Length: 212
Image 1 (cartoon, rainbow, N blue to C red):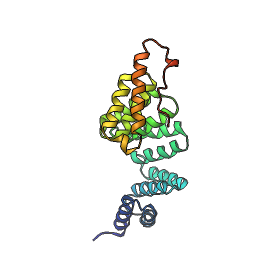
Image 2 (cartoon, helix red, strand yellow):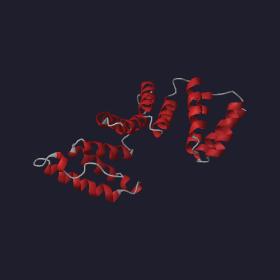
Image 3 (cartoon, rainbow, N blue to C red):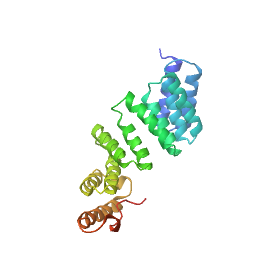
Image 4 (cartoon, rainbow, N blue to C red):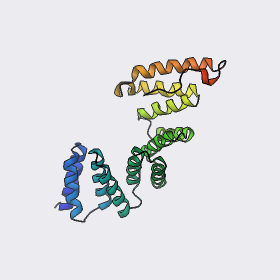
C-alpha cells in the first residue's frame, strides 16, 4: 500500500512534469507537513516549482532547507546557483556550482551554468573550459555549442568558433531558438575576420560578438 508521503510526493512530481507548478507546490507542501520521506528532495522540487512561478525568495528558502537536510545534494547547489546568477550574484553562484561539481563531477548542466556565470564576469577561458566539459558529458545540447562558439569568437579562435556555430545550426538550434539567420551572418563575419586578422589589427575587425 502506498503511503501518504509517497502519494503526495508522486502527485507533486506528476504536476511538476506537467508544468503545473502551483499544484506541484500544494502537493509537495502536504508531503513536507508529514515530515516523512526524503525531505531534501521534496524541498528541492518545491523550490524548483516556486522558481518557475517566479517566487524566488520562497525558492531560495527551499533550496537552503534542502541543503540543510542533505548537504551533499548536487542539484540543490546547482539550482541555488541558478537563482544567485539570475540576481547577478555571480561569485556566489560560482561557489555553489563548485560545490555541485565536487559532489557530482558528471553533472553536465552545472558546467554549462557555471560557464554562464564565468562569462558574465569576463572569465572567458574558464567559461570555454566548462562548456567543453559540458559537451564531453552531453554532446546533444545545442546551446553549449552556440555559447562556446561565441566565446571562441571573442578570443579570436575563428576556426573553433565557426566549427561550433556550424554544429549548432546542424543540430537545429538556430531554428529552435529563432536565431538561424543571425548565426549564419555571424559565421560569415568570422570568416572575414579570420582572413583580415593576418593584415588588420583586431580593433578594426568586424564585431566578434553576436549581439542579442
